[in-house]
Image 1 (cartoon, rainbow, N blue to C red):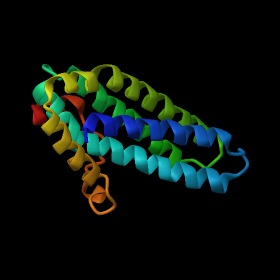
Image 2: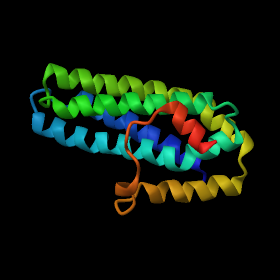
Image 3: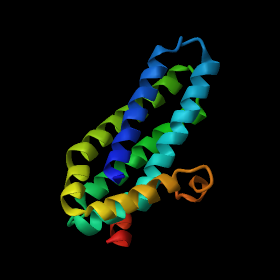
Image 4: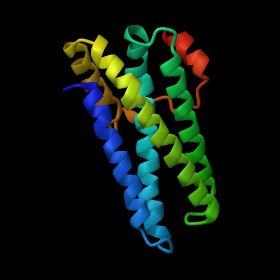
Length: 165
């Protein structure tokens, strides 16, 4: 098992989940709300698990100066803020769709940067054993039992890098 493979698999799941939203009749707010609720929760757990397990090790091994990590934490914050805006809006309303679109855009940008920079950098610098150990920790962090203990707060990117360097 390799944490970078698991992150990529999560990214695929996120893309599919947004695509499913595209296919729901806009008047079916019950279905939209259910699907979005699961996706919003998944986005949050994924980001928080990355922050707990992946990014501290990326900083240690492959992100000298912390620029990739700062950017990723900022992206996570944008996603969180858009999810909060969606939660405050009526499902299916213009404000809700705008917030969902903002979450999707921020998430798409984040995934691309992570896939092009952070994950390849990590694969080049981390041993197979470390990638395996982190994969187990990452999946464990996302479980129903462990996820409630994850820190899902918006984080200051500079402070995060300082604390984890």
